[in-house]
Image (tube, rainbow, N blue to C red; front, side):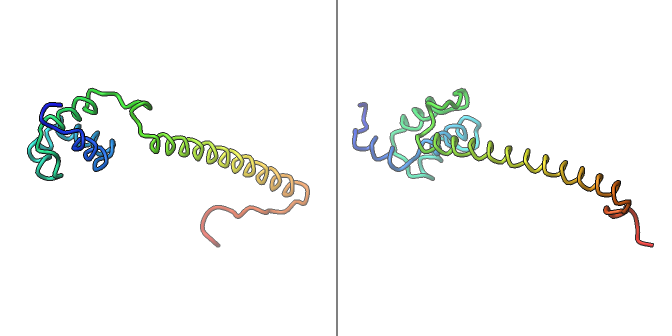
Length: 124
């Protein structure tokens, strides 16, 4: 490789997760940080092509897809989707339970001729 050793590449892969590379590439493209500032601030290899490679791979023009996600990110996404489905199911159950309780109160008020619900408004 041009000026950078394979050992350095492996070290950079260990030190910087894909999520960081994505973030940095987008920060550079949007002008929030310069390449030189990034190299100095995050102690990245002095070979400037490393950062440009990240910008090319993970920059703003790149669509985030499942193939670009790390295995942990994919697993987290699946767990979150599962949790959303569980919560949606629990919400649906709570709505049904609320309808059942309201119906039960309506029937009880009608059959026993008593007021179960509190009346709205200030106390008299």
